[in-house]
Image 1: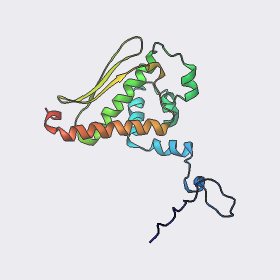
Image 2: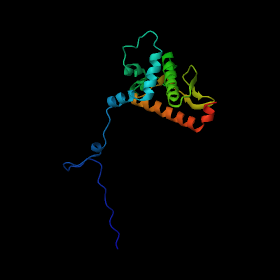
Image 3: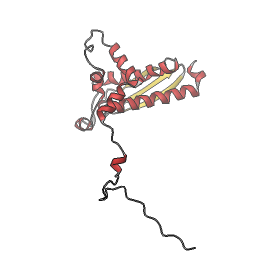
Image 4: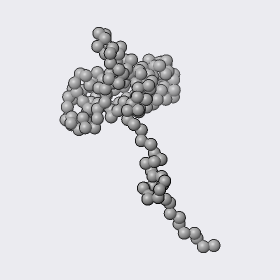
Length: 182
């Protein structure tokens, strides 16, 4: 029996046939505003907002929405390009980093019942290290550099990174529970 000729696959590019589906028809692009609204409902961002609001002893942020409070964590690519390559972080950036990793620790505590303590050692030129410990277990170690550029493209990216870190830390705690409880 002779070999059949290779069949050609339909192209995913635009065709001139009426009613033909294109690649853009089958994949729906998410609206960034909708993704950010959905991200605000994630447990990690709720922990971060709660942690930031707890620092407001004078009620200056009472009238602000959660999105307004988290706006400082959003650094667009254009804003990042405008920043110098090397720079000293200001105290507000360092505070935001501490709050971000503190929220990871809070979310870990809510999920596992174990306190996760963040410790940060930062050089004045913007590089350093952040660790989270639970008992005698180091659940997160992160080398930080260019912290003057710390931020995320969107609230959805902020929520995704925080949720990913919490899941990774929780997996380590589940792998070594006796060390985490020591």
